[in-house]
Length: 336
Length: 152
Image 1 (tube, rainbow over the protein chains, first blue to last red):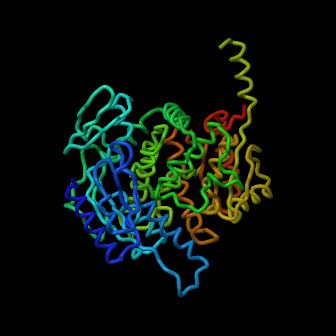
Image 2 (tube, one colour; image 1 turned 135 degrees about the horizontal axis):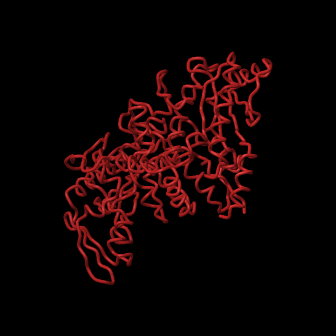
Image 3 (cartoon, each protein chain N blue to C red; image 1 turned 90 degrees about the vertical axis):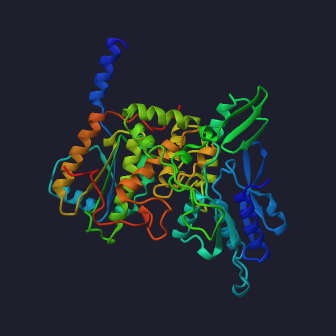
């Protein structure tokens, strides 16, 4: 039984596809595992009933929008100029997805006309690690959402707990649950969460001793097996050739040296300066459960404290590394 | 740890000289170093200069890679704000360095491992003073351990 938002998404998607406004609708569909929706690409009006939207829809879809448009452009490289076509993509966008789209637009990746944003108010999604803790690490055989409760079934039996307890970290402090730009809004806007200060995490970590911080960083990065899932899922990671794949120069060694893991993660995160929307997709896809958010949030923190900027919130405000001011703070400059 | 080993470590610590990589701008700091040289100013020989066209050319990766490959300290120096040969290279570089410096400190790398400064072509004496200061700071920290790639 589709909920109210789902019904609106489906109606709008059907209209867009029937009227041929868009070529494809990127959304979420029921996945093969319980409480884990999968991204889907709808190209025919009769398929729109596959679309769903609830707390099991996790991943930021903006990366697919970028990939679809850019790949289409590449495929047109040898087409005569008068026969060239543009791809128009509709996307189901919550707050973070829409902010990623704003970043793409700011970085001139595609035009606003290439994308139709079906906005959805978002109450957060389920964190797979927290859910797994609730199931005591046992395999979840079935699961469903029941209002603000989650019901899961494992070999040990059925258990029920509030959704709030398994929401992802970035959702618990989300200040932009509603899309910042949208063409159509499916449902009423919801209030942002203000239960915890979003930077409390950074301040707690920074308050620790230097060697403790390093020990934590080292331990977390030692878990990393460099599968690059975090990079692949990230909508802001769209370079045609990633530094991690370059061999001349070889920025990151190919071996299993812990130092290469650290350097890879430092540089990937550094590339997120002023561009991370804290959607939590990298944390969600990480197979080893590396705590990336503690570190990524620091860049967000500096972005706000030093340059009074928030990633992807305002289309008119350029990202901090794409702009400068004469009187930028420079306390770190040595003056002997 | 036995007293003998501790004593041995102490002597190696005093013999130890830091390796410092300096990424410098061609138009100011590099000329400043030249001036320090022709003025016969003395400064510690621990620093290895790498000349770049502008501080804006410095990929933050250079700094991280220098630390990874065993530099005990990295000095980055460019033109004073407003004096860039390319108008604004140092201004955009300043933002990159601010993010990087804060981030490296946040993950627990010592603050004095990465040092940023502005030295113009006429400041040969400042160049000598900066190198002295940087060498003293890095010496005080001791050999770099964090982020260093150890080949076993």
